[in-house]
Amino acid sequence: MDHNGYALGRIHRIANDRKFFCHFTGFLEGVAASGMIERGEVAPLLAECREFVSRIADDDAHEILEDFEAELLEHDTITLMVDVRARQIDPECPKSSLNRFLGYCRGIVCDNVITTSEAQGILQMIAHAPQLLSAIGVKEIQNTCLDAVQDEIVTPDESLTVCDAIGRVVGDSYGDTGLSDVFGVANYDEYQLSRFPEDLDGAQVVLTGTFQTVPRSHFEDELADLGAVIAKSVSGKTDYLIVGGTASRDWIEVNRGTKLRKAMELCLVGKGPRFVSEWQLLRLMGK
Image: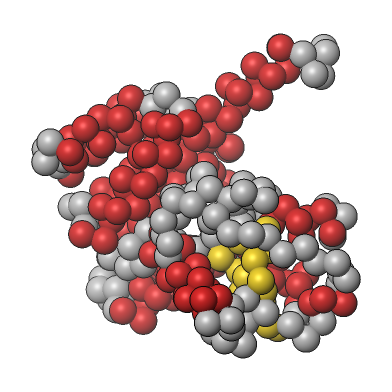
């Protein structure tokens, strides 16, 4: 087969379309998992739908946007979409199950709040597809959810713990970044690390966004091994903000979340961090 030819390209497109279909199905499932469309879920739901409409022909995403504009968007509409889409996903396919699960995680964490029904949904998905536990970080998500639902009420502290566990697998939520999960990246000039890895030795580093290649925890571990100090929030002491996603020199801005907004505010007064993409780090690390 010609590896640069039409046939291989078509295979890749079909595989990517399937991946995004499963992810978006899980995302919708996560948004609907609490039994209602919560106020904090509306903005990330619309951001995700806009990205799918602009890049992939997804009729459900288009319908959600139309219903929202007409003030007709209802929880039942989304649950019906999930039911129909789920019938098109092979439950025996490990990749499809994982992409749907990751989409679900992103859907429930998009507002930075985990409800009891959402945590129970994670446990049910793992019970129905135990092979998910072989994926990095899923066991930790399962354990935090088990702890959270023990007394059938998820406390704010337990919600935060589950959000953190999910974030280590799928990246920061919309509530942190203001970015849609599949395509959203920030539009900022990227700093080129000219003295790698010396640039990172002793530097305070914050990671944000959805990492496309390896879990964020892997980047954190490797950066720490190079001498970087990993922090969870942006401050005047932050040297580098590592942005995950499909980044390039001209990053596409969707929305600004808390970490990116804070970084830009600091930049305006000359105290902001330098922005570095996931892809630059991969190249410098020889990945």
